[in-house]
Image 1 (tube, helix red, strand yellow):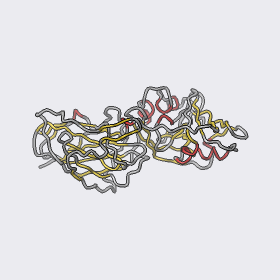
Image 2 (spheres, rainbow, N blue to C red):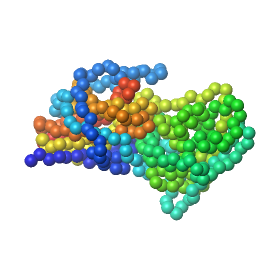
Image 3 (cartoon, rainbow, N blue to C red):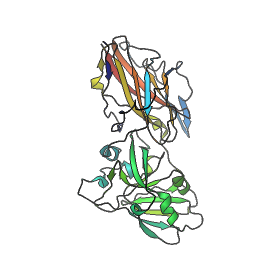
Length: 359
């Protein structure tokens, strides 16, 4: 009798794995049809990003001991649910002492320590400076939002609660020509943003992350979160918001080209031996932060052929949880490569891979 096997999920590499992300794949989600590609096409595999030329082409690197299977078919499912545990979201995101990438997370102290402080001072080119307790405003919002590193692999997702930055801006009597907003943390860090961009993206002043109220042993515990924007702008411990008129509106920085369209396989390599005929499930997460993921693609022959699985309806503000289930009739050692393709045709510059064995 054939068995169904699933490679257990765990955090691998720089991935911030969703807590419960893969649970519920079959909850009202219909599998998308898999489509076998022709041999590797140049479309989207080499693309320009400013002065950069980014190539996602793969060389045949496997030795003859690996079993290669072309155009592998299987059942594909995806959703955009799941959250990253808070300790990973804030403490594994990076090492720079800046914005969301800093660690340790002082605003996530143990229960009983610290206090919730959501006061912020508002100043700049406005008629009168003022202070406000953001948590006392009336237009609270809760949003599931992705968060991605600008210069590295980590990415995550959280359910955050706060009020729109627009609510605070509306309280200010702006002078003519104000075009820039800067949220300053208690450490003095602040990254200028075009005011119009922050408002268009519905930037949130957040005081709760994944159901946990933010606290701090000193200063503010308020945070800035913004959909489809790199974590570099996710300022923590905000004490001041400055609204200013600048001669040149600041440019918005995005993900560096080599870290666009990130994908990870969330499987334990040590639990990757199966019996011929077993149904084996591969799982993972992908995110491009700005362009929707249009498909997740798989190769079991070192990139000679790809099975493309559409992610119709996926949005750019959240990651894509994916699951691909298939079986193999030949014993041997296998090498699976996963990549993502965006709505604007960009293929993952850095693919993910997993070795497994069929006996």
